[in-house]
Each structure stands twice: as structure tokens, then as C-alpha cells.
Length: 203
Length: 203
Image (cartoon, rainbow over all chains, first blue to last red; front, top):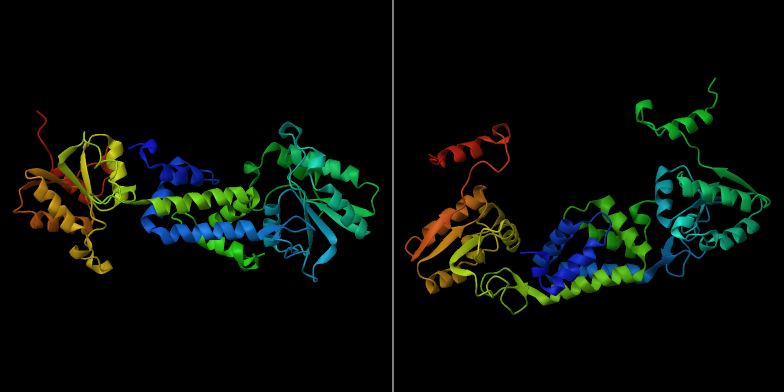
């Protein structure tokens, strides 16, 4: 029995499940059969949850992070957070690892991507106008560039540094160096080079 | 930001995704955020596919395998298949590996489980009445007991062998022995014992 032997409804379910990241053909098939075996309620519950989340969750009008549609996100609506620090990330999902490390109490700004001419993503595709407004509204704030350390991330950081060079804000970039718990043997050449460049005195 | 910081709609979506086999808390969270990031269409498509499959797919009235609701399954409705061989499996999903091995052209019968008093599954919970009817309708047929080789599978096989002892059918059981491509070092004691018991002359 091959995939094309399944009834069309099952084929379509497998195709949709396969679109999820980390789910291959066999995994999608297993999931689809699991849903069929569980009965209608299981499928209905996930279906409702998907629709409800997709309909009710949007992006925060201030920073672009996930929020209840039309409302500010959990960071922007929290008056105890430091609005003089704006951590600039590529994607809304990048907010979570920073929140989890527990050492940042400022606000965020999600660019919606990184400059990547090869993928057709130019500066005008990023949410820079709203970032400019936020910087203007918080003179003296700190822009922490927490974009990736890949080529596109570096290009985006350089672009932002130039864009805000004359604005009334301090621009910082995440440190680069050895990841925690790693031996020298595991570090690649560029990481080691940056760790050396960023060395600091401890005595 | 912890799980309880997510809007309720996202928490519910994570909870539903986590119910899928092989999906843990982090995996479910990643999937939920991926759906939010993809926009409404992605969630809607999977949602529709889930509902459609759950509503339109049922079990074959003859053998219990998946089929379009109210219709016979792909095996039972295929006139080229050998109706004198009925392969008895525990679950509808057990049909697929047998179909894929490509060496069986008979029909199936899905019991819907295996006898397991500890889990409260007794013979009357299995679809035995319909199996009896099928055997009566095909005198001289072969019942191939393709239930698992665990304790409950063995108990189920013994029970079926006894149940059909006086029926006009031949009862066979899948061979047990060394799995293909395995060395003696990987085989457990029971597997080796059964491989020895089932040894056959090759000269």
C-alpha cells in the first residue's frame, strides 16, 4: 500500500502534517494514522485550537512579538520593564530564548527578518519605521542588536548601526565568543577568532 | 517567559499539539510558534484537513481497516486479492507494514486490540463475531495470526487458535526468529530460543 493508495482525505492530511517543521513523510503518515485511530474528537480539538490561535493571536503593534490580536504583547504591556533598553531581534521566536535566559528586563523589537539580498529581503522589508519612532520617543535609550552572527545578521547589524548613528541612542551588539561549556576543540575558527578579539582582562 | 505567559489560545494549541505521539513540550511549543509565524492559512489548511479526514474516514465494515466512511477498504474492495487468506492483526495500523513487505495478497482482519486483562481488554472487546462470520463464509480459508510476539499477542493467538479449532479453516502464525540483518550478539535470549526451535533443514 503506497501513499497514493490512501483515500484523498488521508493524503491531504498527511500532506498538511508534512509541512510542519521536523516532520518527514513517515512521521506525517504516522501522525495522520494516529489521528484516525484516536477518533473524531482528537482531530476536532487540534483543529479548533489551530483556528482559535490563528484567529486570536497577532503581532504586538509596538514590537512585533506575538500578542492577542490588537493588544500589546506581554513585554510591552508590563510597566515594570525597562523601556530604555530595546533588544532588536530578527523574528518573534527569537524573543523566547532571551526571555528564558532571565537576564533581560527591557523591551523588544522584532525586525521580521534580516537583510539578505539573495533571498530578496532588503532593509525596506524590515520594520524599521516603527523602530525609528520608538527610538525617537525614548531619547538616550540603548539598542541591543541581538540579530544572528551569520553573514546576514552581521549585515543587518551594520546597517542598523549606520541608520541610528546620529540618533540619540546607544547601540550595542551581543558579545561573540566561546559558548558555555564548550572545549576549545569544539569551537570553529571564526568563533575562536572572535573570542580572542573580545578577550577581557580578569585581573 | 514561561508557558503560562502565553495567551490562552497559544497554551491550548501547545497542549493539543503535545498530545501527538513523539511530540514533547518543546516540540509542541516550536510547532505552535511556527503556525503563528506562518499566518492564518497554514493553520486553517491543517485544521480543514484534520476535520475532513476525521469526518470522512471510518473503518471498513468487513475487516476494520481504514476506509472512506461506509465503504469497503482498499483491500476488501479489490477483487484480485485472495479472499481465502485472512491475516489477523491487532490494529488497523498493523496492516501497513504487511502491505509494504509486498508478499501478501490476501485480506485482513483488524481485531481492534489484543487480549490484555491488566488493561481491561478481554476477548469480548475484540471484533471476533465478524471474524467468525468471515471464516464461516470462506470454508477452508487460512487464518494467519499476525498479532505481536509479546505476552498479550501470544495470549491472543492462543485464544484465537482455540476459538477456531473446530472451524473449517487452517490457522497459522507468523514465524519467529532472527530479524533480518542482525548478528547473534544483538538477539535476546527469547528470540534466539525461538529461532532455534523454528530451525529448518536447508540441505
